[in-house]
Length: 107
Image 1 (cartoon, rainbow, N blue to C red):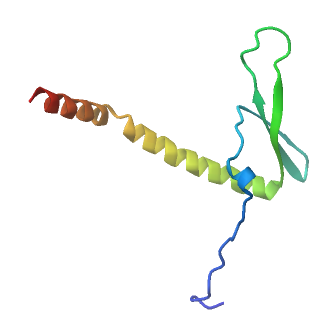
Image 2: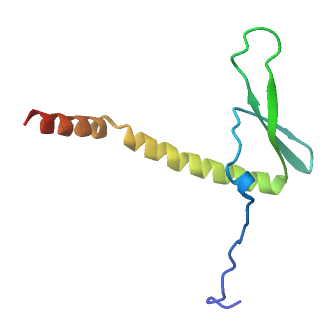
């Protein structure tokens, strides 16, 4: 294949009612020899007695190969996010921002 071969790009369409996504604060992962199933739910943690109510908001079945690729992509994204948040929360960054605003206020 030639080096200058045209690259293919994904052209994914999404319905407007799906575009907003769903909120989940609970996930369950099950698997077989051939696939993984991720079940996402919204749980009401404010209930103090009895069973904790919840509703499944999404369920995704995927091949073991795709699960491995998804896990690698999620680890990469989390690492990048964690690094960015760590830099953002450094004392030097926080102190500099506060001292500059205090200095401007004092003059």
